[in-house]
Amino acid sequence: MRPLITALDVDALAWKSLGPAGLYSKLLSRDPDTGARTALQRLDPGEGFEPPKVAHFHHTYEELLGVKGRFTFDCKRWITPTSYLFHPPKTVHGFKSTVPEESWFLSRVGRDLDVNLVPEPTGTDIYPIDGVVPQRPAAAFADPIAEKGLKNYACGKERQAFGICEVSVDPKTGEGTAFVRLPANWIASLDTPLTQSYLEVFVLDGDVTIDDEFYGCRYYGFYPAGRAPTSFRSQSGATIYVNFGAPLAVEPVAN
Image (cartoon, rainbow, N blue to C red; front, side, top):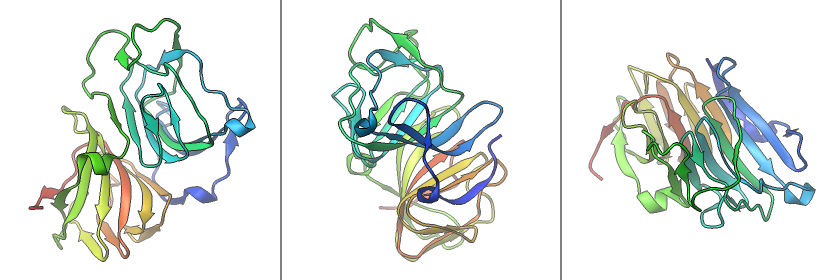
């Protein structure tokens, strides 16, 4: 199980080289049993980073959030700040990877990451190597909120509305990912936890205080199952990248 991590200032962490030239990482959280982890990755062609030349797949999912710069796996979809990409397990990708400038992205995987090369892919767009349609489908959005929009929800005693943009959800388990936008002077006090499973947050802009811990821009937190927070407030408003292991205890309200 991943440990409880609260109000981690990601900018204050040092970059660690992963070995190849120009490839760096800041490990934010990791499950020591499975290898599931979240990390901020940095690709720097100015320091010699070269992307893989051959298509490949992993036996775990790969979930990416663009933070800085731009890069691509296929020269069709470019990952730029706030872009989102979800590759299900055994999904072939990397047909024409290109990193023209220094790029940062938040990377999530469900177990230790393996790389399986596919020298002769059968197509030029992502596809399952075994032909099985994944339960949680692939997803790609250049600007998720602009493309999908926000739906209004409320939670807690105060019942103040806030926006959620779901970008990828497992239809059976409810595990998924969303962008959450909080208005200024927003508050929610819950009698029960927001979710019965894990909750992971990464602040993209603004501020939010979670169970009395302050989160600013590029702050990170991971709440294991049974430790989900019950108190939230935002002074200036915020946009937050949120991952959850089960449905969130929120109710839709009229837009």
